[in-house]
Image (tube, rainbow, N blue to C red; front, top):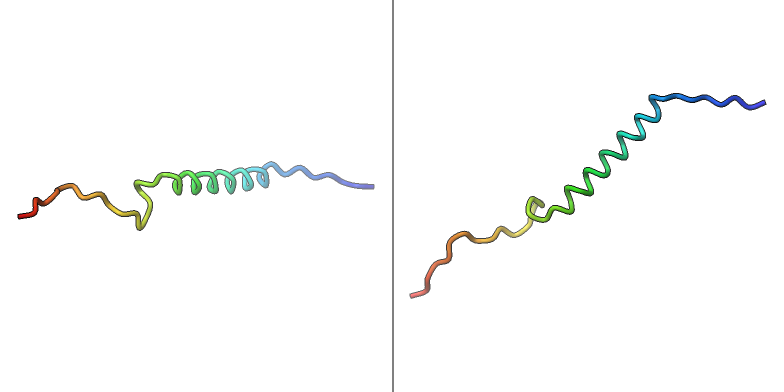
Length: 48
């Protein structure tokens, strides 16, 4: 005999983990806000 237990809160825990990992991958794909990315210079200095 096998008992099957359904616990809906465990499903929500897994759903939350998948949501957080998806958000992490999305944040890594946005290059402009990535930590350590080179910043473009706003002002160009003319050489004399």
